[in-house]
Image (cartoon, rainbow, N blue to C red; front, side, top):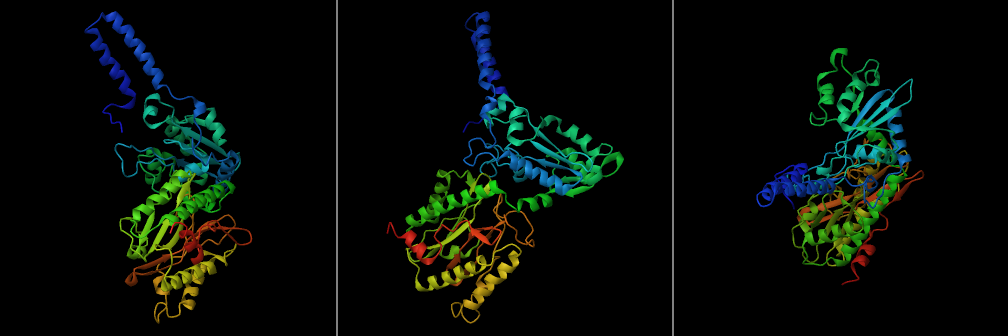
Length: 482
């Protein structure tokens, strides 16, 4: 890694100035100045920004760009929900590999900004204006390109025709104008914000926008306060229903996850460390086009399998133990979330098999009842009722339900625990997990089975159905190399 005390844009001029001083000490100054002028010319050329045609939304991503018509439909749906008002969405912030590593050094665009623009554009802003008696409008603000910093952190899109083409937003402006223009847009006489409200996300910070921070926490100036509305709640309602491009990305994320899990099952052996399985899974993600993990991988063996969010992954796995692998690849900003529990020796023992099939039966009972109009709470009750009725003597007189210690489901999408109200009834296009589990610390047994579910007009599609799930499928997947 290169570490510099100079600002990126200062480096070449400083170096060339030093060269001039050294040069003049040994040869005539006029010749030195000619050589240094040539060096400056070459330095500026070296620092020149890459050609615009090299810049794309999600440049190089295997997922490809979001279709412009999808982006336009999402923005229109948001403005329709807003009615009259102004929405302001801030992009993500690029972090420093030198200052922030190992925490928070991976740049990832803000989910809502990406959802509405399809761009990775640190320092950008999206402003949407909904009007009652005039057409709605969108303005995109992007930082202008700077040759020096781009040599360190890569090219930025910048305002211009390429941004218009990629987003479908015709009004693209320099980010340096954001604050002054927002003030007129929001506070001006008869503004849509005064009429219907300013829609912003919770947790707005002074560092993001001093102007918006003042509005949120200090009122609206001489003309009175501007109503502040919850933008996150409106976007969550939209993001809960996945469009065709979102489903495409989720399908691929799940497929990548499944292929990596199958490979890992084949290679798993007693005596391996949890981190070896973790490494195999994550290598499988990367080589198939996953840009990052959806969440830290959980590989818990024996007693660690009873800890729900265990992610140290350091223990050596002993013969006969179960291993809980809760993992998910992220593809094009959408995350899978799949859990499989495997017997490290290749076959379940009789008690492990009975408990596994109890969990599997509860999961299938819930999957069978997925359809528009039901809700996650009803599915949770159904899975718990199945475990209660089918436990027999497996967990003593009180049954096994007491060992099912977490909820059955969560929404899935751009976040692994995606946005949206859990009270909302299911609709086609929603995606969520179904993941019953039984955890018995006294026996060092943890079993969780998790699959990703797409609600269809008539029921459910299990996106992860191709990943070995039954006792026979798991044992078969682990057999070839034994």
